[in-house]
Amino acid sequence: MIADSSPFPWFSTARRRTRRMVVAAYWLVALGTFGVCQWAEFFRLERHSGAGLLFPLQVVVFLPAILGGVRAGGMVKPFNGVRWVPLPDRDYTQTLFGPPRPLLGSMTASDLELDERERQDRNRVHFVAYTSARWMALVLLALQCVAGIASRTWMINFGSAAFFLLVLILWSLPQTLILWNEPDMEQPR
Amino acid sequence: MINRRIYLGIPMSSRRNRRALVAGYWSVSVLLLICATILFFDDPRFLEHWWMAITIGLLVGLMLCFLGGGAQLGPVADFDGDPKPPPRWALIEAADRLIYRWKHGEAEQPLELNLDERDRRLRDHAHYRAYRILRMILQAAIIAGVLLFTRPDAWTLLRRYNFVLVPFSFLLILLLWNLPQSIILWNEPDMEEPR
Image (cartoon, rainbow over all chains, first blue to last red):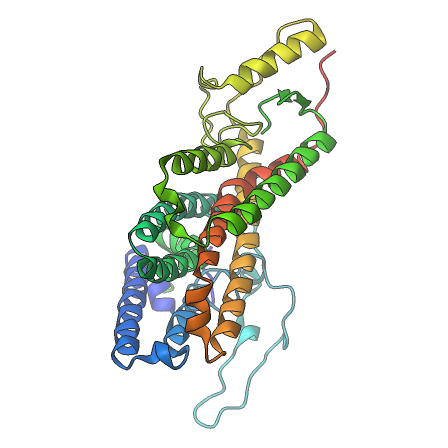
């Protein structure tokens, strides 16, 4: 299920390293979000613009892009396969310095389509992810109700945070589960 | 994947009936949500009334269990493949057995409650599809949020209309708890009627 043309080949060969990368990615997201919220609070950005929203948006878009799954180019193969490639064969692009970098054309045939075992794995992982998200959403809703009774301001703040967490989980939990559970690959000699 | 021959008096062997059940369930749920939004959710303190909190809790519990997927309570088998029969307090189950006996003149033979390999695949695939649908809905919500935040009075608007958060959360929970079951009920082919 891990792409052969992974953007981080050193991380993707051993399960231990992949797990570390997943944990590091989530810590970065958590710390980054906390930092940006503090920064926005410090500069009172919420009174003037939606700048505080930009970082969470970036996280929601880029975390699945690194982990893969949703689109091609990440560590996990795209869940729906790749049906359309703009420059299918050798899409070398002109770069100013150094050799040209291959993009989608460098994807191997096995990265473009999932086989039967991988489809089953994908569906199974989505079942686990969906079930986890389901229970978590229920807990968040209960907390939101409690917070709503306590104070309306709390409900606004907690509701946004809960919503963000849910979005993050829905977008990246299956990829995380795949990266977490996939066994070690053979090292190229 | 279907563990009832009759549910609420409706024969579950026909795909048409199952689709009608799913369509009815979602229509009623969304209607209830809209009514609740209009009537109550603009003031989150409505939950302070104990009778209101209990009614809403029971209603949400019923909505979450209605299509099954857990504890053999609804028409879809337990997703974890738990072979235990439905609990004794499940009155709908007892009523359905009586209806079956009245219609067919014999006691209903219990269906296989274990999930076989095909059922597991179907369950996983339904969850995958449900996950994708939900992701698209959240994507649309994010775009709507970004468009909202381009307005200079975004925070004022959010504070004024924050009651939308609660029904939106309910809708999300509804989808998370019922979408895979709905997909299964919608797509399972007709079963053979017992003769």
